[in-house]
Image (cartoon, rainbow over all chains, first blue to last red; front, side):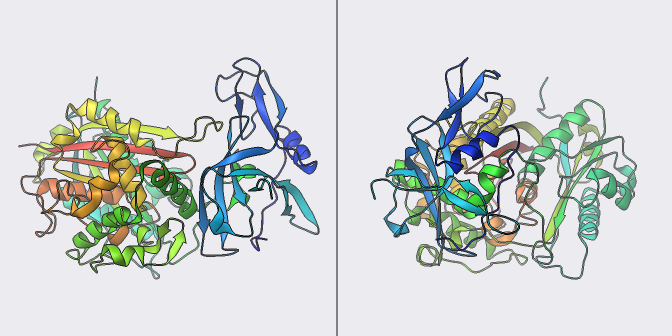
Length: 136
Length: 385
């Protein structure tokens, strides 16, 4: 468990459904009906082709570690920063949670493990798309 | 139309301070401006173009132009992070070529050791998805290094050679923050900061600054300084861009470099001296590959065994000690890259590291965060005979 403060994201009309999905344990990306490609982080207009014909796509929340770096210094250290490439295609910049951070490696399968952010006031903020090793 | 021989660098100045608790940042800008203008043999009255980035104090360039007492007809505050000042040389040349100014002053200064510096950019569309990640530059560049090691077998020892070479140069720089020569063992045994980057893989943090004066070729010929001419320039950006095809082993320099070499009409094999932005050791290794000094994946072998050390290696780099050992003012190492390239081309580098007959140099840099979204700028400079 990280002791770092996790700043609460500020949902907006372009991203509200993303945070709503995470509240239910679902990682949503954006898919384009014109070029057929998906993207993350989600935008209204497709960054691959410029089309406005994009829609939400629920992912399975599974992927593999593309790269990672464990921060050893500062507040909340150690914690693992990583890119996870989703089975649906796009890469997600995230944190990995594991009992043994040194056991993490490029290529390892991981699954979505949502974690609440820290609200400015009382209670928790929106869930964040953390990942954890799959199958444990 | 091209930028080839469109403008010259007539003045270059690196502030000697590395810690400035009793100065202000505007004062540092002004001292750097005065230093570069004196170096060129010009005065504030001659300046008709002014360039700074968005970290400069106040409202864009307007505050600094007024503070410095300039009367300008062209200004530009293009922002590309640490490599901005390499890009500003090219943008100044563009303005000079178009007749919009003839004496362009570029300044950088900051005091990150002495005061809190705002680095987070509010309102960026990626913030909600990245701000909580804890993506400091250490982990961002660390992920690039980890992936490079995974794909190409690059080792920590090979990365360490970059720091070792920088330290060999820094020992001859009386202003260098870290003038002590270090070994590969020193680097790999220094504390781990963000895997696989150790403390000695990271650049220094310094107060300070620098300034450049870019002038038209006609004015350059009237000054009592060697004529250092811009031959070519390139810029590019790169980011996850939706997250498809992520490749952290290639930087935007893979585009900015070839663009600059093509415009200059020279190749990496022609280069006598290279200023390569060294925020971390991996930053240097990737840019060397991306500029074409070696093939992708071969950077580790290229930098090993002192190949970057002036006098012994094939490609002398960062002979001032670079950001790794000398200076990284305001987290922005682009300007010192240009300044040391100018020193080398003039024959004014420290005698122990001066490259003989140095008439062609490259200065290249990365701005922003290599593991996320970043920019790159590259310029090729030549001493006119």
